[in-house]
Length: 113
Length: 115
Image (cartoon, rainbow over all chains, first blue to last red; front, side):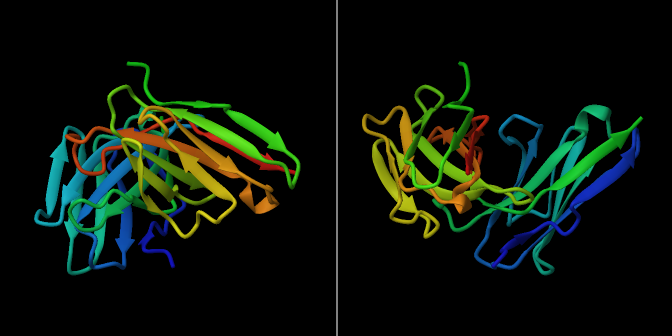
């Protein structure tokens, strides 16, 4: 059972525009969410996170929004840059102290010049 | 700090053979994780160590898989009697106890191909 789902395998965005990546989850015990970014031949790198007690967290060009009632989160990148082209993974953690990250399938983002 | 390193980066083996992978975490990181990633999927949790203690194992970790972290530093993941379904990228990650929740530092992975 896929507890974290990213339903868009790929997304193409024009440079300078906004990129919006979506993620849905089914397990109501998840209380912390993260986005990781992965370039080819490298491991995933942490990008931004959000606790379930918040509905928004911002870090520079990256903003994550959480809608707990809909069990949905999204990552906004604005403005999008060519270096943002990568695979983005949504991940979730259970109760405080849990160490096991549960990942979605990933979305490949391509930023076109 | 050179980051998390994994060795080898690629491994091709025949079905039925045993393989062992090594992970060197960031120095002084007390937590170490193993994940497996297949094509088109995100990483799937396999197991987790705090220092030398293996604290959690996924049901994905069949009895053919064993992981160790003998001195709380590097870790090894062994797969016995490999099967074609074991073909995947095996990722290692580490974190410090005081790091933000979920902030794990991943290595580049070991790609296993079982023929």
